[in-house]
Image (cartoon, rainbow, N blue to C red; front, side, top):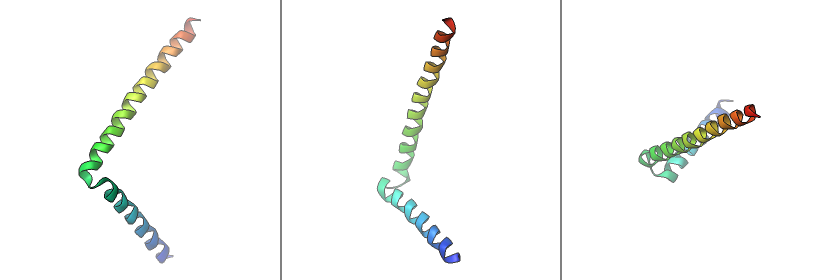
Length: 61
């Protein structure tokens, strides 16, 4: 059982290493995360505004 845990830990370490190799280093990873957060905030805000406005339109009818 310990061998499986070690294999899983190696797999996790390799996947993290793969991400770092793909994106270079943490200097590039932080802007990617910030961009993703920015996009989620913009689209989330758009969704909330659309939802609230559509509720008001439905209530008026």
